[in-house]
Image (cartoon, rainbow over all chains, first blue to last red; front, side, top):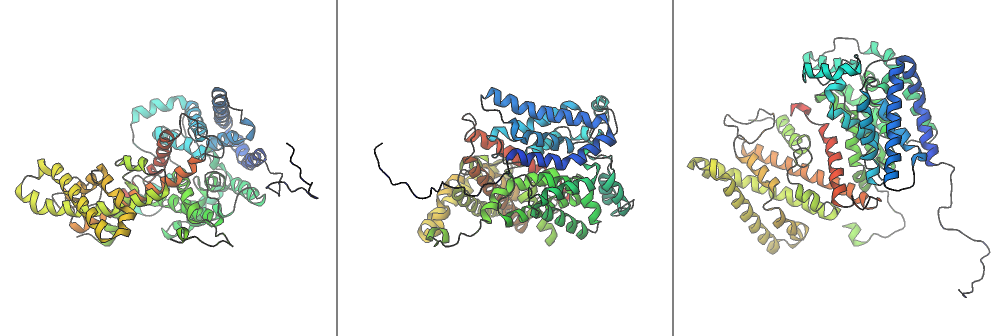
Length: 337
Length: 211
């Protein structure tokens, strides 16, 4: 090259011009840190059962990602921390005594079909942990419902002997749903359940152990600017409003079940939620509406998983419709049409 | 007679809860065929709404006043319905091309594509022929048939649900365009996996309102 140029007084590199110290790994580790209080409390109250669930889920998630990359001869991506988050979230969204092989299959599906097949982190259309959970729930829903208070090796035998008699476990939410279906009223005091739900709850999924710790973790993430407040606010707000409109106790319905875990940690997944601010609010409201309708008019006591998956599916469309206006540009005829 | 709330349930049940594409898996060829592009998906959705409503009306009338009175419906309904739908849509296409070029440009090219589509035939049959409507709503008469108004609401629900699922899916696929999907999975395979995952979400609505 013999082209001569005068050296500019100041070199301006190409964009981006504003850099930040936030890295993918850093953000993922913050999410794990925010989940840690709930996870530790779950281990403290449930003991080895919770340890095993976490261990199987995390090892299976990391192992799947490692094996996939090794087989596809791609650079290893374990260090971005997203498989760890998926493993932790999947474990927290399952009942503590879920058979270990179901957890492993769920983690495999979550990582392989939920994320890697789309090209890895940043390209998954749905939240990987919820894909895994939906797969496990729909494949072995009856087993999961019966699993809560029994040893896990006995579960399948019990299940096949009893047949498909119920899909709900005897959680407070399940009892509330069957009470409502039977008589339109509740056979127990919903307000008296706030304290156990907030502090120590040994039914349902592992992550439901303490609503207070989940809220704490969620608030930390919001204050750190890691998640956008619009999604949990829209989700929880709508959940409460619709519960109230159906004549039920809004606080009970926000605290019970998977709403808090979903609203703070699952619906806020960067990749599968909308990008625009208005879109995020719409998305949160949609999650809350679907979740509440699932509880009040649906046959299952809880539908957080499906609510978030459904809105994940709508996220690209929401993004299209809430695209912020570009200022200083004259619209072409095509855009105006 | 059916109340307004029952008609609303009929619509929601047909559009979302029993979505024809994602819970019943009927009419998947246009679903995968045109969803790679948003504009074609919108055009296809409008055409499907138009064609389904039109063909259900026609088949309902033909069943009620020709096939049923003559007692030949049980074995002639499929050829009769296909003939009616195909010829009707072709006539409408010719008319549109002449009378309304704008409308023709918006959906004209999709009309021939869906004249013999299974989703259109299925919906027209469910709307017209007694016993084919399977939703758990006590609105059919003793023979299991819908009235013309209910058939129209039902068909509108099905076709709007078709359009909703198609446009949702097109937006998802547009995002997939940029993803570094493996060479083996690019195109149709990843689209099928996406559709499967999307239909997982629709499973969450099964049984809502007892539908």
